[in-house]
Length: 121
Image (cartoon, rainbow, N blue to C red):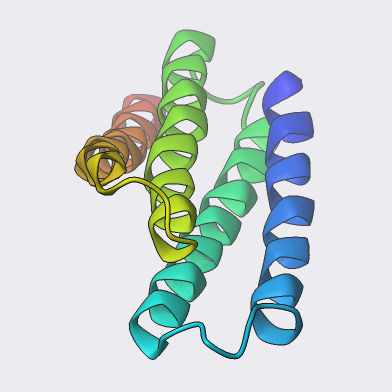
């Protein structure tokens, strides 16, 4: 299932970015930006694990709902964590508008997953 591959790649990227954030970022990196960067890594890693777990549900839950949750998680991580990474590293301020959209997609992914699980009960 592709969602497992994407989730595993997101997980590997989160670990790598976490290491970069802890060891390689400039000493002038202000604490607020470091916290933002760490938050991006955390959310990316949590949702990478969720995407991998979705792969284990493929035979138990409606595939269309799993697909929708997978897309919501994948795009949500890209927008939420991606915008936080950019903001933390000094990217354009307008990228902040992507953060709440990504957050809503992550929330939507969890809700879709809950509906899928409830339909299976």
